[in-house]
Image (cartoon, rainbow, N blue to C red):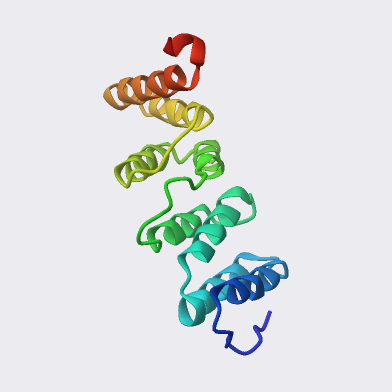
Length: 154
């Protein structure tokens, strides 16, 4: 897939729309890598990096390591970005240590998790016999579940 000439628009919104249009043409990992390079060269909008991260982490045909590299290229990931697809895919693929390490990275940068984030992380901790990490993760999961349940909170 050859990309058209660089985006010359001065507004971020129209640049984002142009890249999103191109994203719909991506069918393979190499296409997404090419678009990612284009974003970094021309637009440099971290919201688009976040979108690419979400896309690559939720697609089973996309490399998990590439999704992790996109996450690493976002200097300040938004706290609301959804990590559940990547956590689930890492755990399902048997990358248990990577699942735990990724959990540690996202909590370190202050990203939010929800009740759906924890099953793949706990599975990973049990598979590698990471007792201490599993207990810590379980405690965080209980805290989040407690805070989100109005009946338990009161």
